[in-house]
Image 1 (cartoon, rainbow, N blue to C red):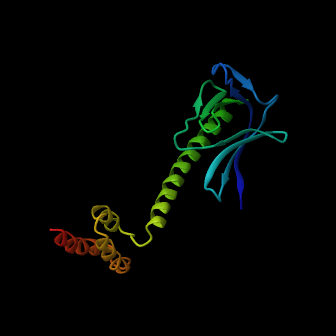
Image 2: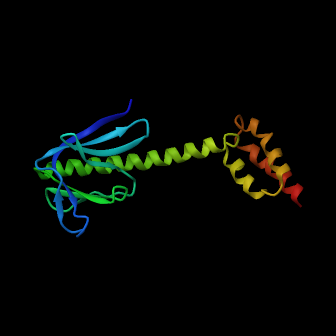
Image 3: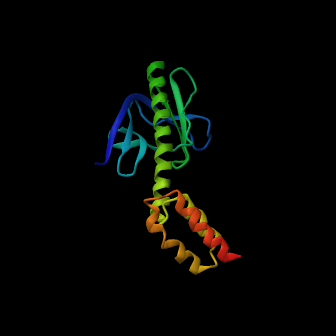
Length: 178
């Protein structure tokens, strides 16, 4: 339950100076553990780093984030929610590459999770219409309330035969209109 660390490394943590947006301000005095966490309850990936008990990074990975290697041992990413840019200084190029690789992996996982949750939302918001046919018909007849009731009745059988139902369903509807 809750969050599990899935990858940890050590790095010096920096944040972009909010005033100049150019200079890096160190947020850790020495190399600290930087971990990727997976929150199974919310299905999100986060980068978290603590300096003592203070969270110096708490960044949720979103599908549109990019981790950029700016030198052989330094990489950065922008977090629009935190309204900052984080920078990480690694002890070796290998550590930087590994971190960047994981970033890419979890960013992709975040994209898939987001798509899945959107599909789930669509399914739960229209539980009686599981086929695409059902979804496509309802916007056509918003003014005919009777039409929507008629559509719902045959939807019970749609689970067993998802293919032929919508076309049979659509024909009487279109005839009724003309």
